[in-house]
Length: 210
Image 1 (cartoon, rainbow, N blue to C red):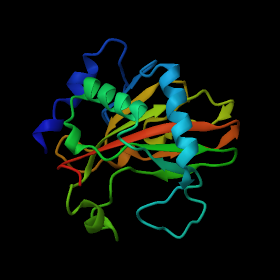
Image 2 (image 1 turned 90 degrees about the vertical axis):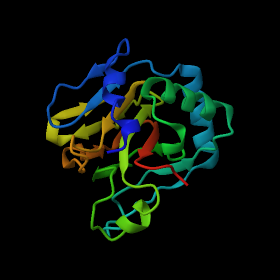
Image 3 (image 1 turned 30 degrees about the vertical axis):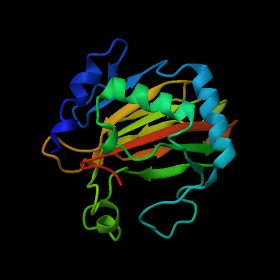
């Protein structure tokens, strides 16, 4: 396991206001008010200006599996740079291990059906996506707005649904303690029933990105 990621859980738990989700099935944390509303609004504007249909790595033939829109956020944008520094401050993961920040927008009826963030070993695209930077380690997801209805993130294995709250961050380790992938991290970006949902996702890898 990459030494630079081993102490992430302990570091997160040491932060004021950080809550560890009570489960022995995965390492997972949440922190409310991680981002100020003004920074959330700036990131939403960037997502709206560059959004495109979302894609998935391993095409399972279900055209409705992921129906949101995605924006690849430019690291040179001031709001993105500020976000990156805040993520580094809480996690301590080296910048070079991070994928570029992505933003997602969900309209009414849109969802991302149950999936994991890691790439399935032996899957059709595993070698393509993991050959250079290795497997995904941690996921950091930030809700940018309060959704009028729906849009929660459901982790069925731990019987937990997280509701969108402006500025709240969820953090979880996609691996078990031995470094293998953790199937209990399966999660569902549930359908938005009313309004819009905006989130940020930041993934980290075992080796430097790019």
